[in-house]
Amino acid sequence: MNLTNATTVGEFDITPATNPHPAVTSNAFSIQNNTNVFPCTTCRDEYPFAAQAGKDGAIVAASASRAGDQGWVQFAYQADPTGARLCVWNIDATVASATAYPGIDGVQDAGYNSTCIALPTLWPLTGKDTIILPSEITGWVTCPAAGSNQGCFLSLIALMPWSGGWLNIVAYDTMGLASQWANVSGGLIGEGGGSTAFFTTNAQVANVLRGYSCVEPYTPPLGVLTPITCPVNPVAPQLSGEADNYYPTAESNNLKSGPATLTCPPFSFSCSISFTATAP
Image 1 (cartoon, rainbow, N blue to C red):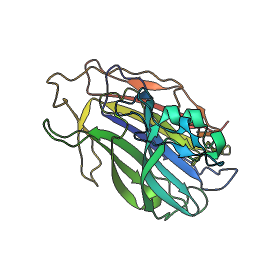
Image 2 (cartoon, rainbow, N blue to C red; image 1 turned 135 degrees about the vertical axis):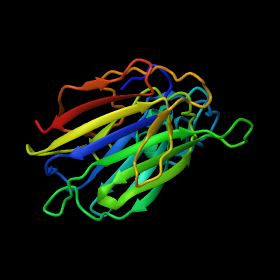
Image 3 (cartoon, rainbow, N blue to C red; image 1 turned 45 degrees about the horizontal axis):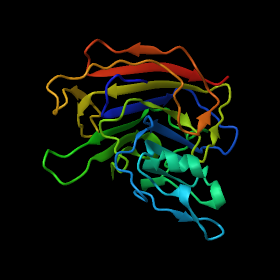
C-alpha cells in the first residue's frame, strides 16, 4: 500500500478462513508488517552497526553502517513448534544487502538488530487443535514532545490467538523511520531466513492492510484504533493508496492474491486495502 504522505502507523490483519496445512515444517510461520526502505537519518561510520570480523578474523568493511545507508523496519510475530516471539527489527538494508545474509566471509546477520519477547505457543496454526480467529500486527512511531532529549520509539501491539491474545513491545527508532514511513506490506509467510510457507488447496486467508496519518493509541482488549489529526500538523495529510507487489522481505508463501479493494476517502485519516489469498 503506497501512501502519498509519511504515515506513522501501518497494520496487517489476517484471518485463516479454513484450516491451512503447510507442506514443509508444520506450524512454522510469521505474520509481518513491513515498512518501505528509507534513508537512514541516524547512520554514520560504524553506527548503529559496527564492522564485524569474517570467518578468517579479518574485518569486513561492508558489515559496518555508513552515512547514506538505507534503513528498514519489520514488525513481526514469528512462530514454530518450539515457541514464538514478537519482534521489532531495525535493519540497515545497505549492510544486509552487501553481506548477503550471512554472505561475505561468513558474517552472520550483519545489519540486523531485533528487540523481541518470547511467547508461548498455546495452539497450532494447523491441525485438529487450531483456532480460527483473527490476528493483527500493528506498528506505529511515537515521538516525544518538542524539547525532549529522547529519540522516537517503535511500538508494536499484536492480537495473537496462538499465543494468548493481546501483546505489545517497544523498541527505539534506531534507523530514523519517523516521518519516512510511506508503504505498508506484509502477510502470513515463512518464519524467517527467506523461508516459504506452503499451504494446501484448502487454505484461504483474508487480508486487510491499513495506513493512518496518526492514531489515538488504544488499550486492549478494546482493540480500536481511532484516526486523528497529527498533533504536529493542524491539517491532516491526505492519504492515498494502491495495491502493488511491494514485498521487500525475503519470506514468502505460495498463496495467490485475489482482486484488491481500496478504501481511501479524499482527505481521510486512513486508507485500507483488502483482498483474499488462496492456495493455487
